[in-house]
Length: 145
Image 1: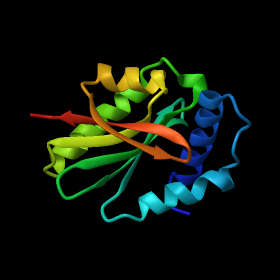
Image 2: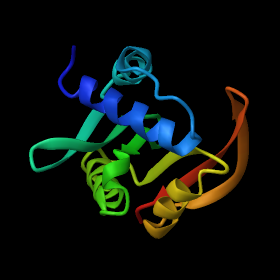
Image 3: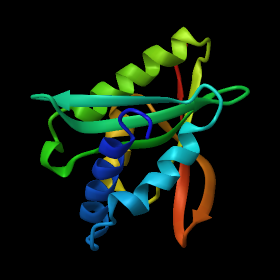
Image 4: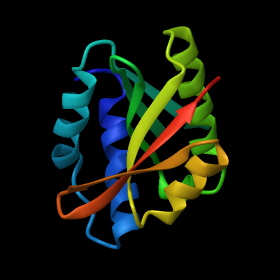
């Protein structure tokens, strides 16, 4: 398995369970989605560590005009510690390095915690919405220039 995928899958399962108040998915259930996005051309996985332990991750891939953030998650034990904000700064820097000045992502419309992190980092909600797995998602953009 690619470096960091197991750690990212663990974090996603924990964060999703806490966010939704539902039973935790297993790493095995979470891994295929992460691997699918990581298989995109030039996809990159960022891991944040505290005391040697992975506590957050972001997974991005360039699109024709943007850098898309497919995953951003923080272990619930590290919520509020700035891990998400730090990962978003890493994503911004990567976008600059690959020549993208616009970033985009989709977030569950009622995920107030994530929306707050994005808005504080300069992301702006668009009018675009979609339904994925029965949940309404809203598109956010960030322009670096």
